[in-house]
Amino acid sequence: MNRKLTYTILTLVLANIVNTSLYAQVNYCPNDDCTKCRLLREVDYQFNAIRNDITLPQTLDGKTIHWQIENREGGDTPYMAFDGQTIHIKSLPKGEYQPAGTLYAEVGGEKVKFNLTLAPDDEMFGYLYCHMAGNGENTNYAIGTKADRGEIFYPIINNQPIFNPEDVAKIEGGVRDAFIIRGKDNNYLMVNTDMCNRKSRVWFNYGIDLLKSNDLIHWTSVSFDFRKGNEVFSDPQSKDYIKDYKKINRVWAPQIIWDEDYNDGEGGYLIYYSILSTNEGDTYDKIYYSYANRDFTTLTKPQLMHDHGISVIDCHIDWNDCDRRYHVFYKKEGAAGVDRGIYEAVFDKLPVSEWRNVLHITNEGKEQVEGGSAFRLINENTWKVTYIKYSGQRVYRVCNANATEENVDRGVVIGTNVNPQHGSFMQITKDEYDLLQAWSDLKLKVQELEANPKAAKSKKLKVAKEALEKTFATNSVPLLLKLYKDTIKTL
Image 1 (cartoon, rainbow, N blue to C red):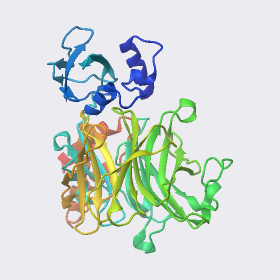
Image 2 (image 1 turned 180 degrees about the vertical axis):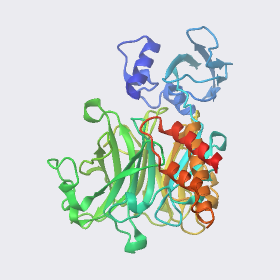
Image 3 (image 1 turned 60 degrees about the vertical axis):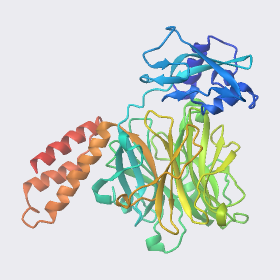
Image 4 (image 1 turned 180 degrees about the horizontal axis):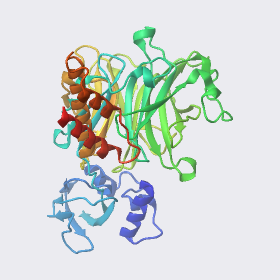
């Protein structure tokens, strides 16, 4: 069942109402200035997806607010307690969103109610930062634990590439702007800009790479050279939004988001990216999108998602279950001076919808920034907004944001030991975290032995190399984790 349908059903059960609007079910109303909406903004819309303690406002326009909560148990629940001022979260439910009662606010003689919904436990251990190398066109990994709060990461295999870029990037042999997600079929998906400025010496490229893996380590890929047009796209009969594909000279920073409404509710992987061409009238980068099939091996023709009127690149889109909107971060490539930077907008529906409520996220003056990204902390409604400043003193910044991904602070700088650049963040399990660490340990040990003339021909080294090449069709992560740990012991 998709997340929006699940959420709607649960809130209907909570309210015991059949004929109510979707706004009422998810704590919205058409009048954005009413008491209810103003109170919702005070708590960053967290009643729709509670993950952490919420301190309720005590006054509105100088008037005292009296809060009261009702739930099925008539008091505190296994998940939640209320002391009149703060909703305290004791634990989160497993698997699905959970109705948690009704909250009433009485202020100035007016009484409004809010349906409370607990978000499910993420059941995650840490974070994977999958990124372009800061010193080359490669893809690197770094990992951090939940306790590191998305601010501290430890490089995997000493910042070496996780794969040979020439094996996956069949157009130019270089990969940039890595973006990774957890797929719908117990797999992992990645997209890269297929580009090698080191070889071409120009800031042009012509396509992207789609990669998939079932263990985060062994990847297969399909490359799409957009200049070939109908030859590479899966829907040759569809309308062409690019006049002449051969004139494309930039396809930058692809990312992935699951669109559950695609294909009459079957869902699909929406891939979005920026395109620039020398076609008449194409004077700046615009945001386009395609759909990949479930197997992540085909791509539909690019269609226009957003024309900002100036060059826009490096889009990052996520779904926020608190304010129930899509949030997009993007770089105004065509801006100058203090207007440069990462901006944020919100919109209601994929793939094409009006972008609104634009915010200037970065505060770097006239310095150049790029690669904006965002991710939510495990079991919290706190978000991290990240970007790299590449002019002046080069830094990669991780900033704090509230539940609606606003009020972005200056955050902290990731240390240079990670060699950070444009990338993405994904929550990972304990097994996934341990697997990546064990893989790193084993690879580094193999490299150490290979450098030793006496050990280079040993049987142990041969066994270790064979372990690194081993793949499993199912249960890949736990099986590889055991294999790597056992192999390390023999060395």
